[in-house]
Picture 1 (cartoon, helix red, strand yellow):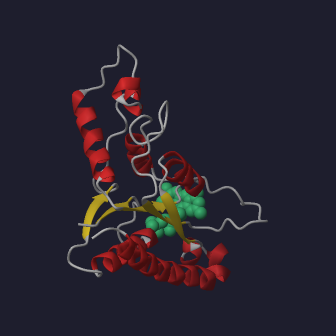
Picture 2 (tube, helix red, strand yellow):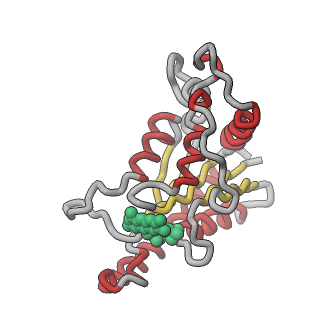
Length: 218
Ligand SMILES: Cc1cc2nc3c(=O)[nH]c(=O)nc-3n(C[C@H](O)[C@H](O)[C@H](O)COP(=O)(O)O)c2cc1C
């Protein structure tokens, strides 16, 4: 049964652009047939704890001899890992917060990026290698090449390193920028571009969901 793991992390429950785009993706996914499953994890409504113990960053066999992470923290981490490992496609709503990801999404990353379990360390461990990961990023401003803010977005590059380089997933990124043009007067002259990017992001989400949904095993 092809399974989509759908994560959202926006703290905006009324106007969130990333939530609207991930919803469009998930609807296109389920529209492919009744056997398509969606596992939903809302990291804002139901936040994970911060990583309780640094030793949880490592596979048990790589931990120091005196490691003793709390059993409940290990149970939570295993649940999050099992959910990710069982997914055929990962969908991540990742709004830009203070040039990075929301802390709720960072807590999820801290639970799943585990050398020796999901990422290589002394062996070539990459159980998610080649699996699709779709990152939906929504940004209040713009970060165009050649402008003073080029390179200020530290969310997408970090997600590409963790999900792509380290976990080996096949990462696609859907971007909508200038979302604040609707409400911030200084950006008002860029509203048309913001609206066009949002429409394009919705179209990309539907197209990508259909393509990935057809490519994973039934
Ligand atoms: C706590 C917080 C921090 C933000 N920091 C940035 C930022 O660094 N750069 C930016 O372009 N927009 C920033 N914004 C604006 C959001 O990126 C923008 O509203 C985006 O649309 C949020 O995604 P959402 O629509 O899915 O909620 C911030 C918003 C919040 C709530």
